[in-house]
Image (cartoon, rainbow, N blue to C red; front, side):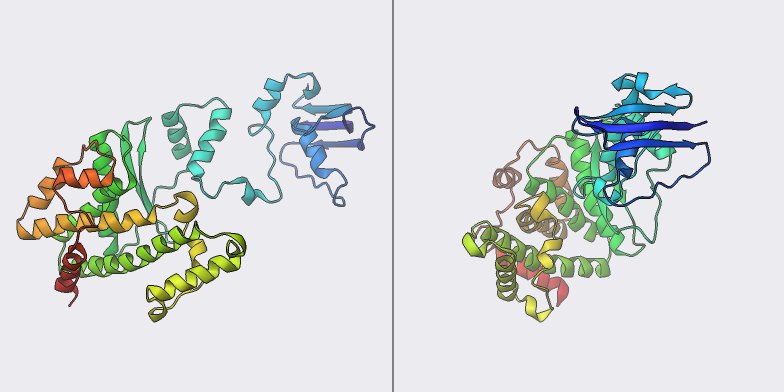
Length: 357
């Protein structure tokens, strides 16, 4: 018999048992349903079988026998080893068990570490073998990409779900820019503005070799980002100054609506609540502004490459191992103009007009 529960009684502290007389057997391949009203003790019984009762809960009477062994006689360490391997519990709201701002891979690795697999490379290989990592293209996958330096491999990796369109070239160039920077600097941290310079810079350099259609697509997207990310940055800056009644859901909706109108969103349509989908506001505060200023610096690589083939690429390579984390200091050391210098907006405008007219 796989599992035997005999006359199980469960209590909290020194009080009388709140669950009594539970008896059932479960053999391999069988399915057993425990049915009862809310609060009747269904979850408590399952927790007792796993020995994970909260707040002083304990088995007051009876036995739980798993594969012939009385689990009451086992140590807490043995109980922990059983959880998630021999005995697992899937909660009613299982989706809430995953943290939405952390990767699933990170949470799986934590689970494996609890069960003794603490080496990142071993955990990664095990998850790949078990097909927990799906590295192939899929139509139902979220169209996204990211680059990550994996310390266990001492190398950066690019993860991307391709859309099988020309836009993939720009996405791959963006992540390859992060890859080059991480590979050259061995994953050392830098300011977000500097990091985005290398990713966006690689996008702009690829335009010089990718054809007119790709260039127009990138410039149109970049122009939209100037406006969109600029609006987000303005909204975020003002959001942190809200107080009193203005610091409410309705206050945030009203603020975003005003910013959207100020930036001309009414010409393309907007929803006053759409800012809630911008995860950067919660996971990386004040990050969106980096997209604007780094895009300006990256565009200068494009201008250099257009003026003299190889000049922009050479400047890019020379600065891959920069130790400057402060963005303006980085621009100064690289010989690039600050996006805050007078006349810089006019220069950017000229680039857009030359390509998009």
